[in-house]
Length: 278
Image 1 (cartoon, rainbow, N blue to C red):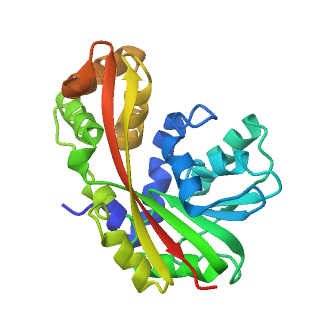
Image 2: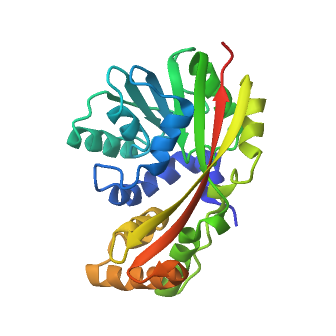
């Protein structure tokens, strides 16, 4: 079965239709876990005076984290889905972050001049477009000479059991198939990001493993947010009683990660870094 996110013609509508789920998942203004965002900032060398472009910014991660750590610099959050960018803007306002700019645009044809930004970042966006090399080439085009770009992507699905647990819980609750969206993991194998970055024309490419064990207390909204992102089309009319039953099924599917009242959730991602020629 073809993943609808890989259908170029319908991708804008696809993400627009998914935006309610991401809105629920981003209900809190502050990111729920900044571990990987902070690692991205460190690895690409963002300093407080830089002008940063965040591509496929969605509801504002990692753009909000980056903007909050800049003193005189700014962040432009760019995404093809205005509905998600509206959430990002609202979150920034709640956090009194005023150096975040919002621009709608597609990563394959960025609406910016050449050599515009000091750094380009993207979290969990490069997996989806068909022309990944073309998207990386666009990032290089808008980078200043000597600038750096960093793309964070999910590791293999087997190393990220929450995805499988959410789908298993949804299947049990609704009594139907919820196939995992394997497109999210198509750059998870070592070397794939390096190949994309090199083919795009960067002077240097490197990869970094990102791993953490996230501790989630039983009853935390972690699983609810994961469900909202995975099946927004099915959860819009659920009562709190129905939500409770659904989340019970999801948590049971993640029982192997449970240690008393804590879930020890392995999270594995990869970060590809490209350096533009001076």
